[in-house]
Image 1 (cartoon, rainbow, N blue to C red):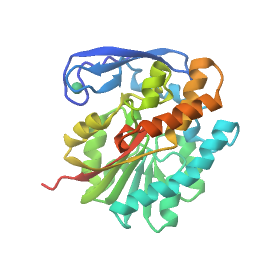
Image 2 (cartoon, helix red, strand yellow):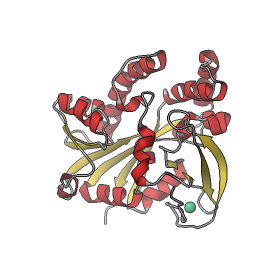
Image 3 (tube, helix red, strand yellow):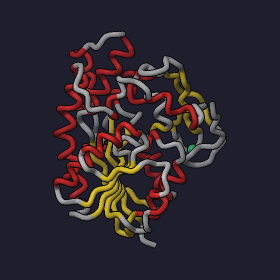
Image 4 (cartoon, rainbow, N blue to C red):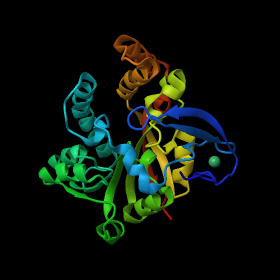
Length: 296
Ligand SMILES: [Zn+2]
């Protein structure tokens, strides 16, 4: 286990434990979520060391890396995904009409494929070999994180970089955000979708909230902390958009963790209430943040 001694956002060394969450999908182990006394950033601490973190991803339940269609949750997830893929591309296209896009944490390449079919020059980075093999079967350009190709990408290559529920998994935030700063064009767009621990469903389920997803989720963002973190790397928030399906999906999983079985109607009501109680985009269960480079 690794102890994080300074806040990844503001470098403060003072934090307190606010929750203890269990890893329901793989290990059944418990992990603490701490909150920074200064900036309020939430992160998993201590966390597994980088060399063992991969073992916490080994589960058939971890469906974001697979294309299997077993089980009702998985079927719903895939149906909703097809719709949201189009919606995601519409959001990107509002800021950049066409060009070169990098999907960081591309998974099996579903979003990349959507981009490619719409005329984008699309590239992905994905650490999981199994996911990369599926992507390559669709003739998509998806690279691993441990090869030199990543470092050989020329500066200012991309018009857009997207991270769909990926930033919360990234072990080295500084390295990764500096990399984005390097390879994004000066007027480029960086799009980051992450769960929001200040949403109604998060507050309702507390430690059972499925989007804490410890220890795979190393960081737990909300508007102020994601904005502050990206600000350090010269990115300015220009838009936030809600992910309205996430409250339902996350509530279903959270019900399962809390009660041992999925109470579909209850989960639906919590998901609905979460969306209805959101006063603005940044209050939803998951939020898409759109950043632009601040011009030097
Ligand atoms: Zn802090």
